Image (cartoon, rainbow over all chains, first blue to last red; front, side, top):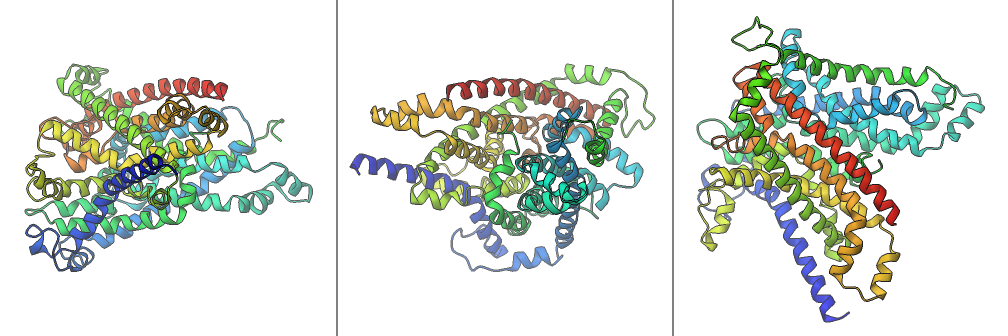
Length: 276
Length: 293
């Protein structure tokens, strides 16, 4: 290797490291802030005795903010939205991958177009509607609206998984005397199981990370962690260590999931857009 | 399969369709509301036809918001494209450092944008934030990051860049890895320099992939809400009041429901038009790239 090449390689590595410092520093800094005792928050910057006090306060309800309940709420509504989306999304994805029928492309595009609709366009009418119907600040109301995030994602990704399966597999099953339903459940579905797992986790992350729906459509009972984490910033004195701890607790599930499904994420994030 | 018309696909798709209608219904309802002067102070609204839209378009506040939104979307999408493609190119060189770092590229993208904005808000505090603390040795200890109009806009764009650059980088990296190798080998044999190869080979072939990312980022940024809400709440003054924030303030904070929805309908129309134009352009570019290969 020539010196010049080695030098440009070093420069490239240095530039990469610089970007990753920018990308990772905020997370690292939140860890530091969350471990600082309240009285050392503003005094010394890099030397302090770490304490888990902030986490105890955040998880222990002592600031009058029921953060654990918000966490459980997030779990319930995210899992609920993903489960409901799978229930209606898998058949729809299968149908649109296997049959070309009148309006199928338009329907699929309509589903995808929700991805680009400004959330407030539907939220404000829903806010009015929910208050009348008693769905405001309820799990059902939140699960219903989170479909806007999870359903298009599941339909579009699963459609491309089903399209990649050759139809002959199910035809062979039909010849063996399976019904269409059995062919779907016993042949097609098991083959796309990894895809179902990946897309479910991705949809879960998107539902978990949503902010604007719970901000407007919940107040206390069904409020989620993304909204709850903001409440530590309010009050007379900003509680930086508590805010940092709350922020970190709220990113644990998405980060853990991201690390486990990393291999599938590229396909998921571009969902079919690259294929078009 | 598929030749004879069967009812089955329709049956399978009906549940998804019903849920979709569950979302289309409030959209239609919202559209209907905008024809009235429905607000908290006027629970028995009168029909005002297009008056709400007239008010929207004649308000300085709307044009200010539209301008801020465009600045934000163009700024964020452009910065993310340049940075994301650069990161992808650097990762594509595949050094040991790159292989290790690639595994954690995704992390910022997995953090809710609103949480990211909270993190940056703590870091950007003028007197006690870590950013100014680190800048102190360079004589820049007192920057009022989110307290000046320009600073607030740039800071919110910076948060967007922090969250979404990995998205562009991932798509660009996937694109780079799918490019044919022979043109690059030929260029290397001909002794073409790095810049020449990049400009004449890499960029034209990569562009369709990058454009997909740009379209996603641009249209998402047009409807930004969470980052601005948590970082600046639209301030100082009106300097970061993007359209969705304005709609939120009008409809939820001031409870002028109809008027607030009018704002979001206008934004929806803009996003829809932008999507149509960009997707058409994307189709043309993709066909051109396919011919060139």
